Length: 97
Image (cartoon, rainbow, N blue to C red; front, side, top):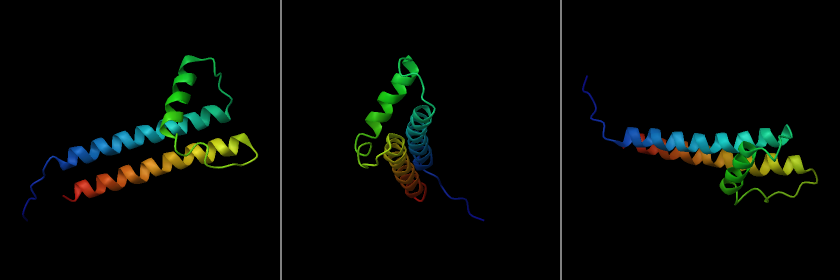
């Protein structure tokens, strides 16, 4: 059985996945903090909210549900799913190189 020569694309693909997963984790963490009514005066909560708002700047105000929790879950959740799909899709393509 012939061994396949692997270029550096495998490690780049892994890096892309890690970055996408971290971005989605931060967005998911903010959704959880929001739903659990985390103390916004806390520095960690403030930091996570700021990063999540920046990551989801294109989607956090996309939906106009009456309930604020639904807007947060859908707006930030959509961004998390998109980052995961795009990141893992790019990584899959890189691994096939």
